[in-house]
Figure 1 (cartoon, one colour):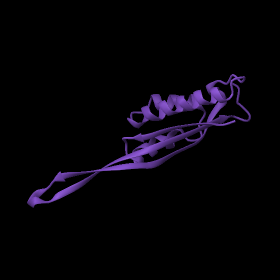
Figure 2 (tube, rainbow, N blue to C red):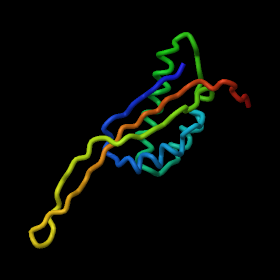
Figure 3 (cartoon, rainbow, N blue to C red):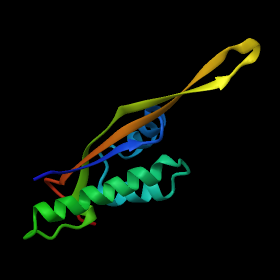
Figure 4 (cartoon, rainbow, N blue to C red):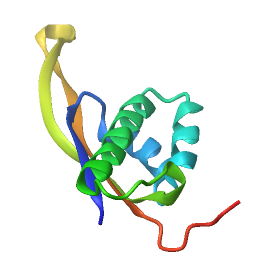
Amino acid sequence: MQAKAILRHTPTSPRKMRLVAGLVRGKQVDLAKAILLNSTKSASRNVMMTLKSAVSNYALINPDERVSDQELFIKAVYVDQGATLKRTLPAPMGRAFRIRKRSNHLTIIVDKVKNPVTK
């Protein structure tokens, strides 16, 4: 049975978050954690936090089943656009430029691997 974790209203643009989400999409959880720990992107901290929450949610949904990170994989990761804060920046000749501070919603779904690979 799959588990889901959602991080809402993250003050990062969806475009930047999608770069990091694409790195871990479809990977096993232990490999995804290693990728995120070595990533230099600031959005990787938010993805790591949400991934840990999804794994924890999986453990809560299936209390009788002990699953390691090697047996779980990321079934789906998607980033949706959140609210946009509109700010103004003074410009020459009495004008104002608009600044759009974007946010996003991150969703991670984890599930158990059907045929785990043993090493």
